[in-house]
Image (cartoon, rainbow, N blue to C red; front, side):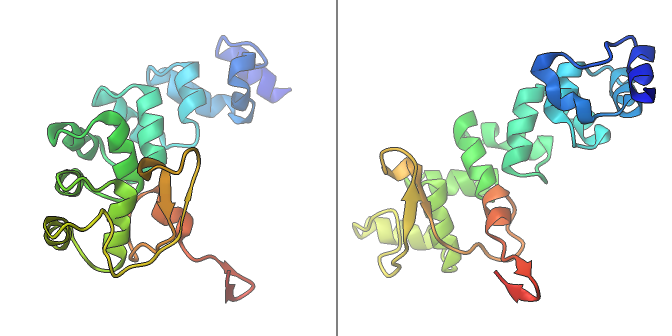
Length: 193
C-alpha cells in the first residue's frame, strides 16, 4: 500500500505503464530522485540499475538513453569521452559497440581496423600476446585475419561469416568489456567452473 501511495504522491499511476513493467521493481523514492533530476519514466525504465550520477554524466554528454544503455552493456566501465573517441577515430557506431564489448579502446580499434581485422579476431591476437604490428607483418606476408600458428574454435549465430564469429579465447586479466567479463572463470564450491 505504501508503494502505491508513494507512486501516487509523485503524480504517477499505482502501476507503471505496461511497456515499462520492469518499473514495478523500482521504489517511489528511487523514481523520485530520477524525476527530480529531469529524467523520464522511459529513461528510468531503460537505465534502471545504473547509478543516477552515472546516468546524468552520460546525459550531460548528450547521449540518448538507448545509446547509453547499449554502450554500458558493451562495457560497464566506459566513459562518455571514451565512447566519443571511437567516432573521432572514424569507427562507426555499430562497430564501436563490438570493439567496446571486446575490451578495445578507440585507438586499438583504429589500429586493428586498418588491418582488416575484426574485434573478435583482434581478441585472438591479444590472447597470444600479439599486437597490430605482429598482425601487420603477418598480413603483408599474405596471412589471414588470425595468427597462422593459432588454432582456435569459434561459434557463430547466423551465417558463420567472419563478422559473426566468436572465438573461444581467454582474455588477459583486467580486460574490459562484456565479453571478457562473461568469460571470467567462475568459482563454484571452491573449484573453478
